[in-house]
Image (cartoon, rainbow, N blue to C red; front, side):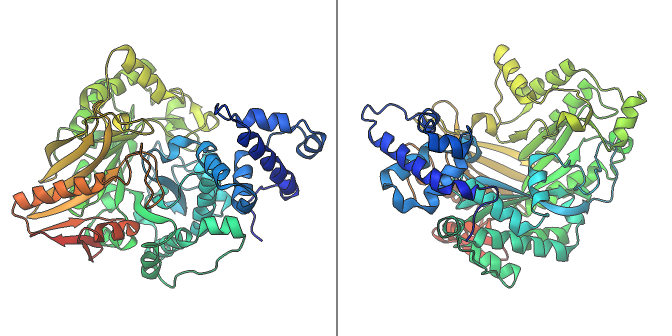
Length: 544
């Protein structure tokens, strides 16, 4: 019989009776006041039986969720529905319409030694053993199936819908790893999502049904309980070529994050990066022409940089058509253990500019440079002070930046700052389009916004070399179960279809006969409803 790790089996009968008592209190709540779970749990736990069993500690929310899953027949459907909506842990995790699931590859996935990049023993390069996602990977022995399954279980026990998953594969330069390992790794990721996690929690019976090949695992995922709607990997620009792109598509990758770091060949030499700006230009064009969503990692305050040069760098990234990333992680340089930069800092060979200048650069970028078609995913890394030789900025940097923007009456127009999240959209809604040149093609960013300029969803259409490609289609709002509708939510209300239809219309206006879509494996059936067919790892439709 399966039980989640760290679940206290000896408390199982007490948890059942506790929840039955909570159900009775909920049913008596005729005033319809908000049900205070913690308050009622504390009041029930004063009973001597519970005092002895729990030893004065409150049960974890996920323990309660597990009991509700395993013993649902002991509770009313109304109470189960109420618990499902009110006992959600970290609601913001699924605010973007999907659940992001991060896994790590094993081994030193990079042969280079950039001066800022940590190399902690037995940990993937550039990461630390005390980062939450790395700790989970270590507990699973870096096994892809175990990482996927354990994460899906915890998402389910936190009351997030787990039928739409974005896989985020980390661990360094993914393209450096042997293909045989990468193929096996991805097959096991699909196997992990193809299992019925909710059935495992309710019945306790493990399923050993695994695919015989990567292709078979992908085919199963088209109708799996947890469908992979996108796959994100990170790699170096100089590892991207035509063969690698074909292989990434074979794996089902849809989003590539490039470790760009800077747009200066001079700084590349200082930090011993090992490639040039031209590598970034070529990789960006190859990836966009193949339909990938392209993300950049850029670093501020690197050796050799100044506040002015960093402002020029972020400006160039979004004005020079050779670059123009769709997604951005803007990392300030951190002086950490296991790096040559830490030695440079101690010897005063590296003297970073001040924190106030750093804030000024980021505020400048977010208020005056960031276009509405980019999503700024991160402003810091999850690095603990324990792993820092010197703390150059506080961990709540994003919060400080947001406060500074507010005080100065400025706003960031990036997608993350405008996405609807868990807010109620305000009518009227309208389509808004932006057209810009990028990597030898034309990019159409078509978004649906509400009266407050909140982004409800968008589509990225690229027209280049005589063809048309949808590189991304995303509808925001709370992640809903496949086929479900909620009156106040933006998902599953035809918005994706409307955006796709507009992309088709523009394609036809350009006299292009077909439209291709880079699609996650688990979204293929969605596009088939609109006449698209699978062809060479893409979904393709002939336009009349």
